[in-house]
Length: 137
Image (cartoon, helix red, strand yellow):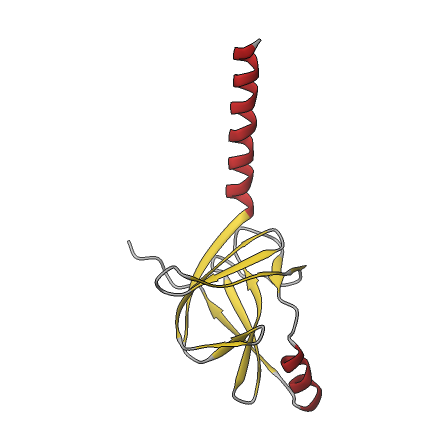
């Protein structure tokens, strides 16, 4: 009985690990401009973004998490073989808005901050998408 319980627990753990690997996605982009996430401004540089269901994590080039937050699922965009990170820009202010990977049908969308919402009320915005950087072989 103890052996069967151990086997069942091992099977459940393997199934959970496989499901987590399928649902988590990560892409790396080089952002050539300052950008805002929530209420914090980040400098240009290489960033990695990963998502798992409704959670987005952004890491700097050293792997340090700089943002972890809740997102909404969004559909309607096709990204082909690369992922995309989408920014909404108002003048010289760009805000991280969406995260898309080629492995999932839906993307992740961050809720606009109060500051972004205020800018959007008075300025016409533009959308800017960065493609995932090619992986080094």
